[in-house]
Length: 291
Image (cartoon, rainbow, N blue to C red):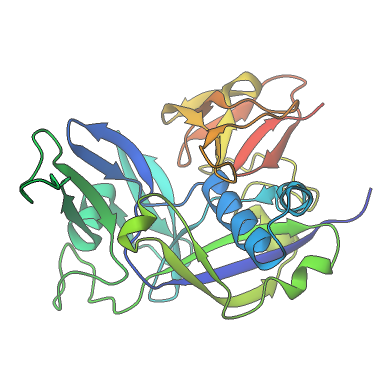
């Protein structure tokens, strides 16, 4: 088996992004992290478009980019990982004691975009067509300290990708632009790659894995989803993970013998322990049972 070379990627957020979470009536809520399967899809699409957009190119890229973690916000140089505490979800810095609740981050960095369909006949809004989209901004909304968060002029996103060969290093260059999330027709989702750094064992520990991408339980909150079939929940929550293939004209559930389009997982920020005999390996931001 070829060794996996792990790279830490840091993207600058250029426009607001919408990472779909839940819909409440006409309101579409956004996540405040980028799931690994979402980042994987963005990288596959960007690579395919730059290299001919053939089925063969997309198929190859899907396999090569599958060792992708979730990506988290970087504020003032510090990455903030999720962590459950006293029944609440917080985002905590790895380098200091700072932490912010999910609500505090939303107050500071999220806003809403409102859209509606227009009738061609009279240019009036169509009935029941109002749609409200929550977006994560590329800078803080306020110029003053709000919720303990100082004014942030630029939001970055950081995560890892593991590559088995060096051919894709020519693609992952500073300045690469990708589109993440939904509602791209509104100009949302633009990220630009700002830095690429090769990392080793010590950095991988913060992501609960070894150099081969296998789960390593260090007692800390997990930074990626974990399949419930391979672990027990000690603290946290469960979520149904839905993975769609956006390289198709009409997005459809992924078709892969090693994974499912719908799966039940413990969410990032949870604390888990492996079930006896389970071997979990990272794939698109989810630790799944490895055959």
